[in-house]
Amino acid sequence: MLDVITIGSATLDIFVKSDQFKDGRIGEGKVEAQELVMVSGGGATNNAISFARKGLQTAPIIEMGCDSAAEAILSELKKEGINVQLAIQEENETTAVSIILLSGGGQSSILTFRGASRMLTASDIPFDKLGFLLKPSGWIHLTSVGGDMELVEKIISWAKEKRRKVFWNPGVAEIGQVQS
Image 1 (spheres, rainbow, N blue to C red):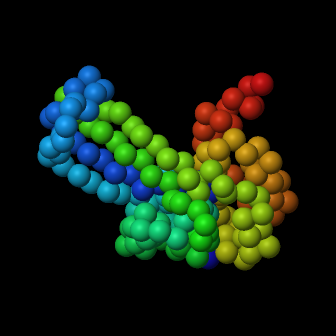
Image 2 (cartoon, rainbow, N blue to C red):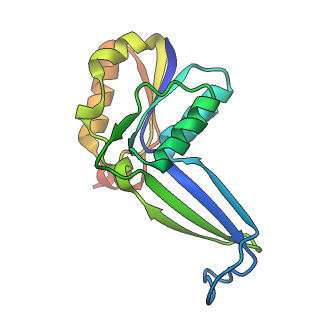
């Protein structure tokens, strides 16, 4: 059984470092990069990795495409010992990708394609199975879900009904709706 289920986004983060990036600008022509790193990112995957590294049995509920970015994310999660049975892959969707341009001086610019990470809905959550997968003492860690407050409410209601605990790290889209 699982100690923690994380719910939210999965992104392939591509970090590119170059001394030629200056003041948030890329420069002209081809730019030589000194470093390139590709790792999973996104609230649900980042937190799943953190929990797994602390010895907790963890699974993320994330939505991705059926593409090389999703393969890279799933491969990293499996290497970390994370259960990926709740990961959703949709044939006609594209996995979220962020490209982080890092200057030699530490400044960064981020290009983000949200893709399938914004498509997770309440109908994607296997509520009928969660009670069997998550320990009675288990937690749901809810990260940003692109402002889908219906999804947030359904997760919290399910947890209350099943006496499971939820901790929520809302994103800007959720905070904006709670404040209005």
